[in-house]
Length: 305
Image (cartoon, rainbow, N blue to C red; front, top):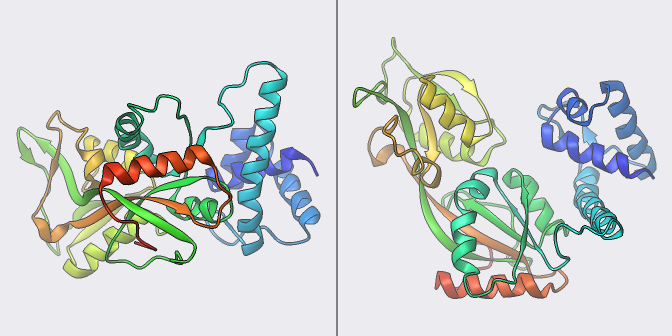
């Protein structure tokens, strides 16, 4: 089995298509396809569902993916040790989280958490919520930092995980402001719908946005779709239309270009939670982070949230 096969599988999941993954790996698309087929032959099962876009994994692929992340990361660590330039210590806490939380929540939270524990280090593993959940369940990370919609159920078993509420946030609609006034307003009109920047069907923030829209039924005209909240911000600033943003991201838009729209009926309350797998093998630094987070949050541990 070639490690490059595992790296190719991870790249395919990161970029969502054979074309983009091949470009990122500087391979031809046929060469990437051969690598994935070789890995499937080695595993004895189909790993990739090629009928979906972005690419998704079969159940066998989900199981292999978490171990692939661990194998590739472990080999990279060994390589760095051999070269005499280890970049991250073995004790680093592997933290899976979304891109939004990685850039707009984690830095301040981690700084406060470790102010009196400077020896703690973390390896961030940004991904979408579903992939991060899989990583937690199959050993691909030590801790998971994720948004939770208290209204929507999720699939964690209370016998397998426990969680802490670290903070609360709010998903709300935003648009561009010109001369101090918003360019768009909700709910729009039947013959003049509001241009809408949406999230993909598989994005967590997209599911929460859909819940809001289903209750209000505004007149919207989709113009751009993306899974990245940071891209939604840029599109709003450019004037493409209205998009829903979490507060931690909108708070960075303090120059007045991006403005919040509508009232509380267009919003959804969110929680930012820290998860750990109760059945995972003990990792002392991760346990220390958990204890510090529980003390700082001042909230009881819950089974599934």
